[in-house]
Length: 232
Image (cartoon, rainbow, N blue to C red; front, side, top):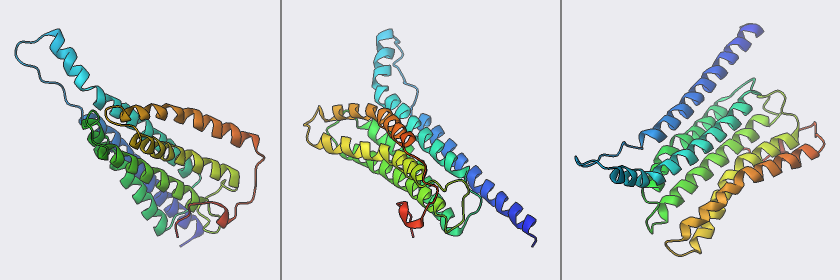
């Protein structure tokens, strides 16, 4: 096989992986809204009844917008990483699949957490937090694996500080969720859910990370051992 044909085949396979990944993200986002059902009222309709029905759907809409934002965030990080990809191997395909597993599980964990958000149960939010942790770790692992120059899977990822910045950015959300969950354990029912207010700090943390990265000079040589996690 000629070099041109090999490159063309590789590019096609990479495109297939990216298209498949984008489809999974699209399906996951679609499944989020499917979980929200139109309220059914008794035959004697009233404005009060429909307002009460809207209020009951409040936790589900909050869960929808929250997960929509985070799925969108993880898609942008994945999309940005794939723009540097020029080659692939079987291990990369499996790591990417595990990452997609974490994404496609989000509609379930979102629905579970939204359904029992007003109860004294802590396990639904724990499931959601573990799901976010799973997603954050896997995208950070993807960055570590693809940026490893020994594998020759990417071009343009020679700056070690940039890769570390993107990994920290990917891990910001799961770390924030873990902290919020642990703080919630210290707060009695029915107030432990208030710890979630701390999640609004995530965009500000990401902004601080970006400013910190922009102040540092580029490090042009990326060694394999300098970026974690990198699954072996």
